[in-house]
Image (cartoon, rainbow, N blue to C red; front, top):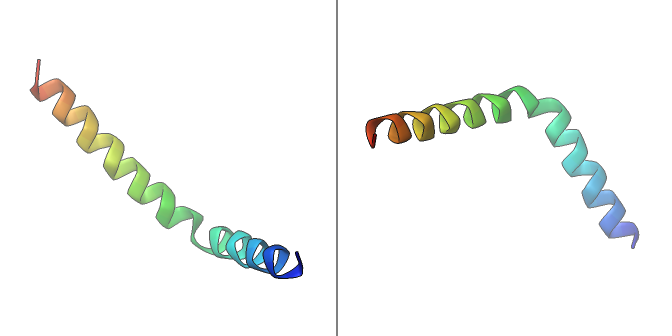
Length: 41
């Protein structure tokens, strides 16, 4: 259980440090999906 809590804390720290990169990648994926949808109309 302690290992699970430590790994969760590490993942939380990683997300705190890199949340802007995750948001950047999510925005690009959303833009590509929106472009594919508009292109298929």
